[in-house]
Length: 407
Ligand SMILES: *Cc1c(COP(=O)(O)O)cnc(C)c1O
Image 1 (cartoon, rainbow, N blue to C red):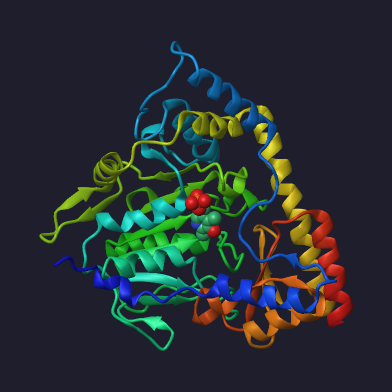
Image 2 (cartoon, rainbow, N blue to C red; image 1 turned 60 degrees about the vertical axis):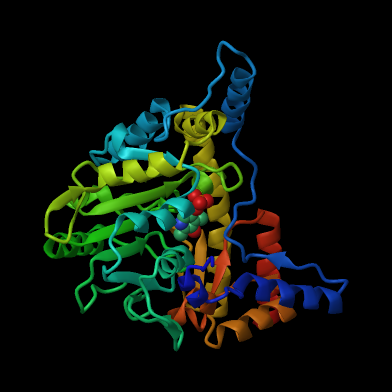
């Protein structure tokens, strides 16, 4: 008899985006003359940058010719991309990361979900609340949690991100082995300072723990005092793995390219306390289960690091950040408190009421769709997430409608 992985039965069905879709559909049915503006989804809206498109096209042409055709490439990514990443994303900021510590992949979602495979079953895991659900669900699937009760999985340590701690969680009170952190944060848009991040690195070093740092939104950081990488923090290379993606920084959500940095000295332990290097383990996992990102996509990603690419990706980010400022300005005028929107494309608004009530009010009064914070965890209740990913025109209209209906 074939039996299933029963851990899957513990997973909470995520009704968040289907519930949103249902409410929007009902509104549109009852208000056929009103158009709805969507500021809910965490997906980019602008086309790929010319630098990437040009490199993409040229690489496709290379594939058409026997002399320049590329078959299987290195599983870890082509040297031209890994080197560009190491130089531009790390060395330029004083983080000593080399090309062979970079593993190119087809997504930070896959990497941040797959990484847990290389750790033992009985580790204690700390996960922020609210959270990007991937970290949570992949550990549930792997059987590292108990059942879901009172809004939380048993066996995990939740790191509350609240107004009181400015949405940067405090160190756990009980010992933990694996820590997930994401800054700039999805969904809250909060950022972490170098000093705050150093307390986590020091904690990991003192406790032989490991930090998984998701920096998918680093490109939105304009305040140069904030860390873009955890490897800007002294001592992080022994105790941290970082996830990055071209999805939000260069509009690659549909093109698929990301990477994971596992420094050579990053270590974990076996049950006898012997030290093992995680680079070798992740390399083994990656090569066994993954055959590399397509050549044209890697060329398109590498083009982000050319002079033209850098200017265009900055313009892309700046475009969305104009929206973020418009949202913040409206929230200021209406007297709502929020976090994010300055070094992040998300604005996390305290709705002063239940998340879904606020969602319904924005939909029904203004015809604007946001994401209810309650969908990201217990601490998200009372908040909504507004995303800057849309056109200037749509965001301007949305803000005018919100002002007119809520003032
Ligand atoms: C969008 C996002 C990613 C990127 O995922 P990809 O699979 O690379 O598209 C990673 N982490 C967070 C928190 C995100 O919001």
